[in-house]
Length: 180
Image (cartoon, rainbow, N blue to C red; front, side, top):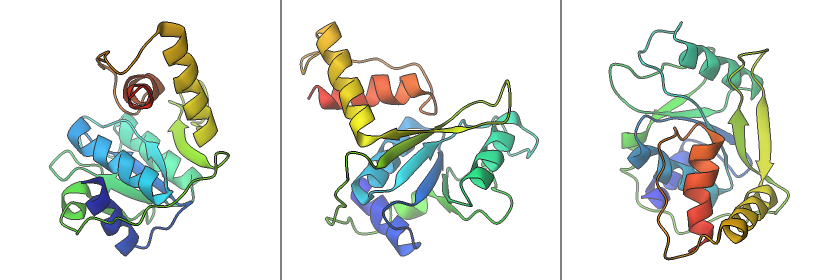
């Protein structure tokens, strides 16, 4: 599934190193989109999901502000009545259309110092910012957390946080993958 999404992203013109905003409501959409970005050398930018399509919704305002900071990345969205419509010329692709492509088996290698993920801050105390996490950051964090807690391949992880939160994505999705 991630390979199909990656083919669609490449056909839309994205290349390794490009930023890809992810405002996807369901984990079953977010997870394969995240891994498509990882396989393609793209840097995903998880964004909170809005309660409505209203451009004044706080999550939609944050998404628009973040996309302006990143010089108009491609945005992956969930189709539907509450879907975010990016402003200011940001191109949007709905996740369902990307799933229709044949899967790519051509994956990009990644430099350990390359940006693997950008996490947007909420902007609650000032203008939102994006925090760049490298592949090395993510892998060393997962390895240290797994070692400190004894978390291994026979353990189960439960997540209640959104995928736009570092705890939901890094602690509850990436760390278990690193544990096998």
